[in-house]
Structure formats: structure tokens, C-alpha cells
Image (cartoon, rainbow, N blue to C red):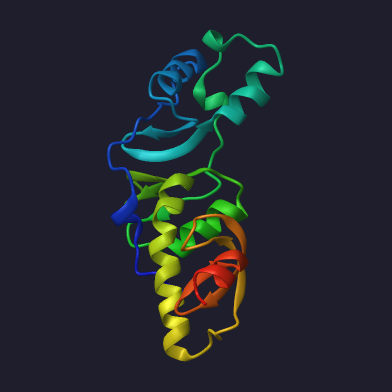
Length: 181
């Protein structure tokens, strides 16, 4: 189900990148300075791959190679496991993150040029809006029963627990007994 939240609405447009001819040491310094776990690899403006901490651990550290002697092009994942487009929906991006076990999705334009990046944090930060839309749609369709239950944070006390849908909000058993009587 579409959320009407698009990649262009939640992506970071200024992306730290690596080039294929950089050394792993140079790329790792960028990752450290900017506190990020992966870099899109770009050549001539076009996305050619992704370099992640996982790639560095697997192909450099675990094989006891010297990071200053290995190029990004020798280690990067190419093509990237997942890419997104500017008009791609939040639900599709979330599905890709799960399906491909990635934490970031590079966003490309119609020409394959990198224009942004969406991380799992971007998706999570916007998931609340998406869930509210889904709840509202369920209420309108009448598919959300008054006795609907779930697990999450109580809308009254904020505790994580088993929840019941009561008076148009999700509440825990304690609040249901105490506050809604």
C-alpha cells in the first residue's frame, strides 16, 4: 500500500561519496569523519556501486590486507544490492531495506546519476506518519475493530506493551483499566 511519502521527501541530497580509484583507507577515513557506515561509489556522476563497513571487514580486514593498497573498486558491491528513484514510495523503500538487508539506499535519477540517499533511519523517522495514514484508512474502511490488538507503545503512558484499540487510540492494559473507566 502506497504511503504518499516519496524518496525525494525524505532523502539526504548532499551525499558523501567514494570514487572507484580511491583506496579503502581514504574511503574509511571519510566514513569515520562523517560517521556513516557506507558510501555510494560514483564515477562520472553515475552510481557504480556501494562500499559498506561490511565490505571492508569481509574483503580487507578479514583477509589481512592493507587498506592503503586496496582500491574501492576491488571491494565495493557492484551493482548495488538496491537502488531507489526520486518518486519511489516509502513502503517500497522499506521493503527493499528488509529484502536486501541494507541500511541505506542510493537514490538515482532517470539517467542513473546519484541524487540522494535514504537510510533506514529516514524510513523509521517517517514511518509514524505512514502508520497514521494506514490507521485512518482502516478506520474509514471499517476494518479496524474496537477490540483490535497489537504490540507497541501506549499512546497514553508511552510504555511498550500489548495494546488494545480503544477510543481511537492504542492503549496498554493498565491504561485501559485505569484511565479509560
